[in-house]
Length: 172
Image 1 (cartoon, rainbow, N blue to C red):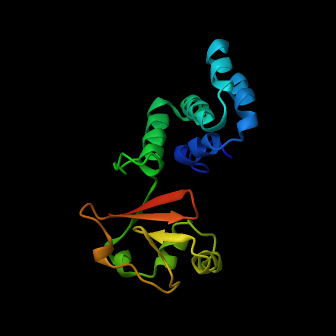
Image 2: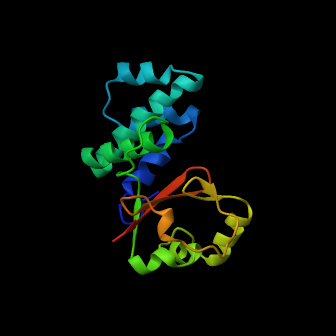
Image 3: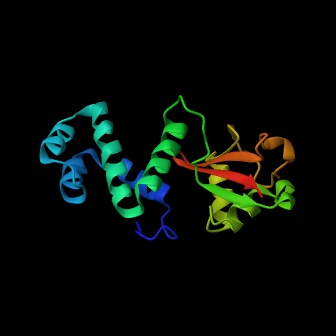
């Protein structure tokens, strides 16, 4: 985890704190936020599914301190759009800009060039395990190419790597 947004994006930074272990929430709230201790105790007392409220507060507060309020808000909105089940405004989801020529390139070439994968081998392995989703469809073929009809009207395409890593491909 890096404080530099070039190494860890505000969205990934937010996600790190959003997914901290339940047992660490109280310590993190105490040490890493400026919340009043009464609020820290209230949030720390939450159990089971309710502890997610405390994790949202933790993620927002720490991201706000490190990256600023606007970046924290954008990370929070992207998370709600992806995992909240109601909002579908994907404008704050991390984006990878591609050229119009990339719209017909091999998916693994585009994603490897964008550093989503460290290598084509990693990409092929994840695809073989059913871990890459392109526009709500699990990618089965490691040699599959992008096509213009995959992109929405805004020339955007949602990619999910594993269970929780999301990216939008945006045509410049």
